[in-house]
Length: 260
Image (cartoon, rainbow, N blue to C red):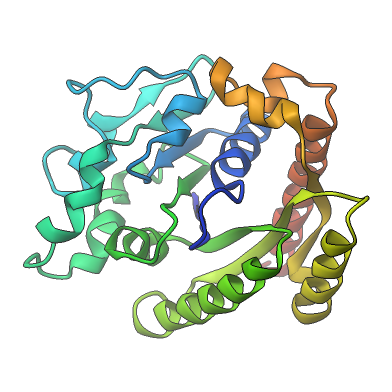
């Protein structure tokens, strides 16, 4: 089992869209996938057409010890694709964990029994570096960073990389940067091309070759409760995520071969 956090301290950069569409692609090639909605806004839950139910256990309940991880998991309409839904209560979870011993490792401990069930767990993190995100990074093997092609996004990226390295040194030695995904890219926009050039120059092959374009269809898909790969398979956005998934899988294959 591999656990990957999809994280960025900035909101609206495509974290949720990237999470659910990589998960959809993995499930399509018969990998068993769990998406953990770890954002109080619950966008991943809504984007998969799941109606939020206060009676249903959530990632919040797992984090504060009210239930086990498997008790909070829902099956989606997609085969081999499960979801741990979010709850607005996550926003207050940091306060509840203040006095908990080894509070940074709560999620890691909760996920230990899932290794026999899933090939991949993808965690959709909130747009901040709080104790919730720290728990996600501490239990993860790697991080994927969606990066919106805007100037200010570069400043946030530098801070995020520093934080990832800090968590690696202090809590999770195996944590690596899996890759950076350029999102909301416009080929007609000089700024997009400038941002792409700067990021590729600095991070090299850590930046996926595939870029995710600005797309009305991508923006529409969540309102229909479907990943873009299901909502409009032939759209430019869907095809971009298919290419990203292929890159991801090639990366995984190379990593496995390198570990032999």
